[in-house]
Length: 109
Length: 494
Image (cartoon, rainbow over all chains, first blue to last red; front, top):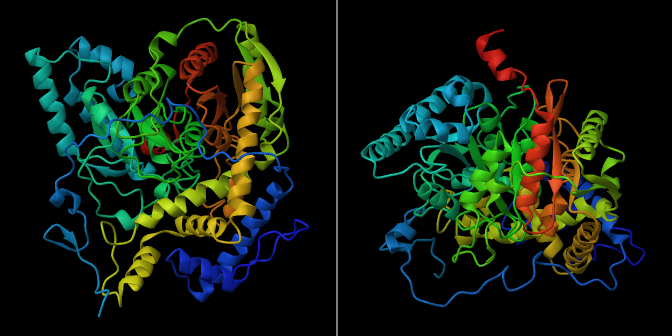
């Protein structure tokens, strides 16, 4: 379980190497021990800057996920079948493919 | 007469229409200019001269036969940032993870340029996956500023901006998620426009932050930007976030009177951190627009101090989700001989992505993760509402806003690469237009120490026509003389 970012007093919690390792695992990335040290330092600086938001009163504010609301900004179209990419073109950039299918390392023994 | 590569899009069109120039001659002139200056500047990641010349020759044959009447973009070579896909060329996003990627389809903007008769000149360098403000995050090489080759061209569309500034291309496309068209336009002394969110289709633009990304044009003058925008704007059935709103006749806005236009100046943008030469240049323009009959008044955008924090939570959050697709299965780099599937994901992504892209994926994963979501992502999405309201309030009393594009002049290569937060803070005047989805453009307004200064114009949603009208009036009134580029001094050895 990850600890909350801000305590109730609005003071941020220091980032640990262990936390960063856990985030990297979720993001499917890995860092060497030396990289981690510098990374944690930069990560902390960036999170400290995010603290500026903690001071803004948003208790009655609704979030925005799309800056333009209204029917013309996300218009719908008829759900009609239309030609798509041929399978060999869609698979043409695959690192490994056979019979128009993507090949990956064995998942089940 | 100027040399061919120095001509604007509109002038090239006039020459082509009068049959004084052919498409092949124009393409050849651009390629020669690139050959001369790009070893220094490195604007292009990919060029295919034979393909380009063959397409240009084919177009000339069509024109000679009289079957094709030249439109405004017929035979004009346009540079495209390498995060938009085109079947004619590889698309790398300046990343090692897409080193050998070749798209089986064209981005809508590329298809629209082609159907307008334009030719794809080449793909330009940028920060990897458009993440950066200097083009130093390209996995291949940095691009240099044509006005001072020890300085950055800005980013992330640095290759597009520098190519246009250095007369390698008469026009280019860039993408802007937090300033990536406007900031390099300012740093390179060219005009760049980020349209309203949804004005231009994002189909075929490699996604960075889907609620912020927009494609837009860069060129050496307002008229050329208007021509390019007219060609790429409009609803696209395959991008459900492209707005179903009519496209204005942008060219007809140019040269119109701007008397009576109400111009707001955000007071928060003239505080600490703004270079004095930039502040002075912007104030000079404000005096000019008053003389042109505009009414200038101060406005407040009180949430400006939260802009960078909000942007650098939301953009990486969206990026971390978008970049999850690089799994080494469907396309992109795959690490050799992985132990198992999970090892393949981790090693391929770790080897394929550069440091800044990984940092943003990490920030994004962190702010979206359980226990942090409310404090960061939800909080930022609420502050985004306040930033939108700042603009909405301002546009109740003024027609458009005028301010600086960047707080500083172009910085030196390497100056900010070890300090990611300092790099992020340089985006302070540009990120809010993306968060609010409003159109904004950068226009050259002077030089300081031989380096260009950009002014920014911002308007309400779908006000591109008005922005271009104002920009064209300011451009005409300023009538800036263009000093000799550093790259030309270097090339000629003087």
